Image (cartoon, rainbow, N blue to C red; front, side, top):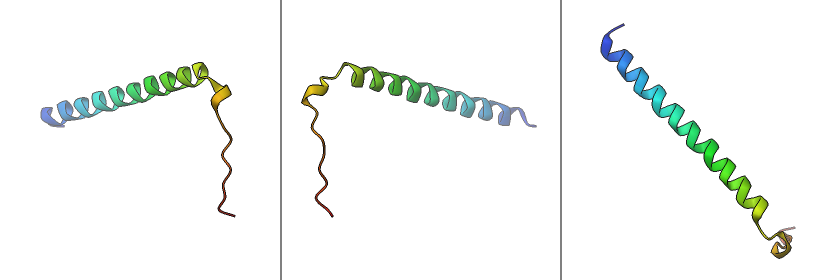
Length: 50
């Protein structure tokens, strides 16, 4: 394989790992925020499109 291809593949792999890491971090942050939310103010949704 050409040397340039290996560099490009490493960059793509790095971006993929970074993106997956950010998604997991944001999912954990969202879960923490949901646990800390005041659930007494949450109302049930009544769908009127029957």
